[in-house]
Structures are given as structure tokens and as C-alpha cells.
Image 1 (cartoon, one colour):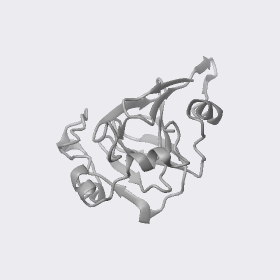
Image 2 (cartoon, rainbow, N blue to C red; image 1 turned 45 degrees about the vertical axis):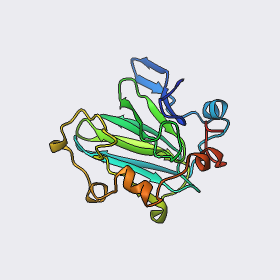
Image 3 (spheres, one colour; image 1 turned 90 degrees about the horizontal axis):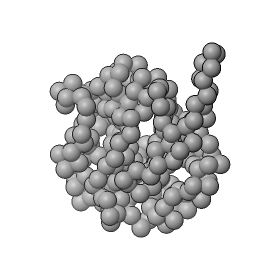
Image 4 (spheres, rainbow, N blue to C red; image 1 turned 135 degrees about the vertical axis):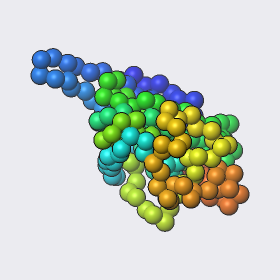
Length: 201
């Protein structure tokens, strides 16, 4: 498995080796031991999620309070998705910046993102299936969002805005500046010092 750091500290692109023959293809899309070697800590798996989306569905930008935060290991098992990591950690050198990885069934890449980072993805095909492992179970009282249409983020999406399908909750989410003013965002120092954070210590 090849591991490439993204432009946002604490986020990585993971490209697995694939073995193909007349039967089909085999790959390891998650290797906890390699993550521990790279980051010094595993994801601490607590829950596995799958979402199936129509083309144009944009989910996020979502994040969880620290503690406990929620590290994620994300891949697409059908279709294609643009996976987006947003640095929402106040005080981070790359605060407000983002990076993206194409997840599809060709290269079968995955994305790992540490606690404290914002996450979104855009389905590029119908029936796009995105599966992700997370370090903590869902807790609605500690889950938040930032508007994916925040002009300050300026996410570069390959589907026109008028064709996007976004939930009312995500549409009503505050901008990054509003969330910061309300004290809703994680802090860079707290995220780096949190015991469950991988690749940040």
C-alpha cells in the first residue's frame, strides 16, 4: 500500500496494491498495522458506515467535537466520488484550506483523515457507494457541519452548483467564519494533543 500525505496535515491518500487474474481482483483496502507504523496509532475502529448516493449528491462538510473526535478511513466500493478534506482546526497553518482525492473502482484509493478535520464527498456517478471506518460511534450531540457552498472555502467541484443535491441540514450549516465566531470549531493544539489523533503527534 502506498501512503501519500495530503496538503492538510493529518490526512493521507492510500493506494492499495491490486492482484488480478481470471477470477477477478483482490486488494487490502484497510491495513491497521501499516497505519500504526505510519502514524504511531491505529484508527481504533468503533463503527463502519456505508452510503449510496445519486450523481451530484454532496455530503458534508462534517466534523465531530474533540474529544472524542472521529478519525475516518474512506473508500468507494462502487461508482466514483470526490473525497474532500477541509482543515477546520483554528490555529492550523492550513486553516480554511482543503485537498481532494478521487475515490473509484479503478485505483481503489482510500483516504485517512485524523480527528478534528472536516470531511465531505461528492458522488460523481449514480449508485456511488462510499464505505468508511470511524474511530468513534455517531453522537448527534457532538456532530457539526460547515456549509459546503461557503464561498470562502471555494471547493472546486466537477458538477455545477445547480445540479448538486445537498441535504437541508448541510445547506443550513454555518460558514467556516460563522462556525469559528460561534466557537464551534476544533482547535489545532487540542487536535494535535488529543490521544486518539494519528499522524499529528
